[in-house]
Length: 298
Image (cartoon, rainbow, N blue to C red; front, side, top):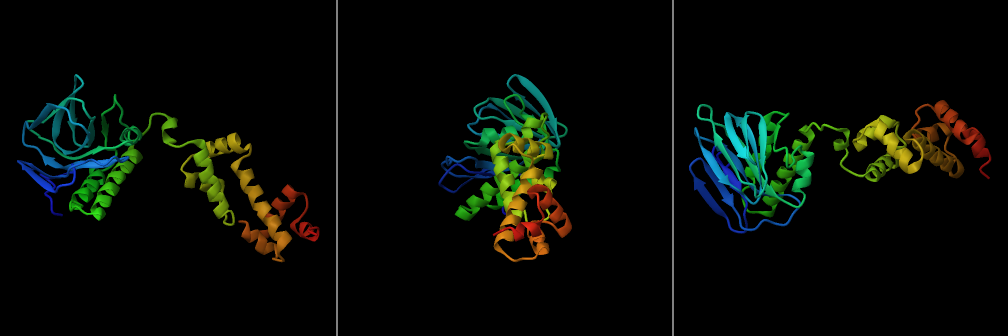
């Protein structure tokens, strides 16, 4: 990697390739910030000397810091926070803050700065808000700093590297969201019930011929079995189990009507390894056996 992780950074401000060097920090700065859902503006590492301070000052973008080692103090919104290894602190845009390294055990941190139309939404899912600007990593710190490394490695001004930096930033937020521990059950569901239902139905329609079960559907969609049941009842007035059964049997009826495939083969085609179990389920739902249904198809 071409940057020094202990004293380096990448800052993205616009169209010209300009390197800035300061004691303990250097970064690449570009001209304009694109109007995107999430855009990296600067990133890097800072191994602070004792009592090193920044501010009081406000910045126009979000600044997120990952404390790798040591201690420091943050002053913001009239409050003072004493921070240490394994913590993350967020500086919102246009909010005056001041932070400084401990005298005896100065901190070493990684940082990522960003803007974007979806930044506030993603931060909320990651556990941050106007009231909450500090949280624990909940994962090894290297999990997050590896994303910073990927951003720094993509310092050359090419479209490929622009995409790499963007991908690393989204990966960082995915890790932040994944490692967040929500305090209430509503936080785990990020989309509408209709979106989850559509995702579940798509999975069923493409996989009904396999021996899938209800837990498989819920796991694929990313929700609990109880919430899956709830959205099926609310939107379709049926359970996931009954929907899957009816969908399979409708396809079985089609095969019985249009092909001469043996019952065993049809059972396998709709997700049943045991033709006897298939015949029993078919008879319970349709009222006659698969063989009788085929005889009556004309």
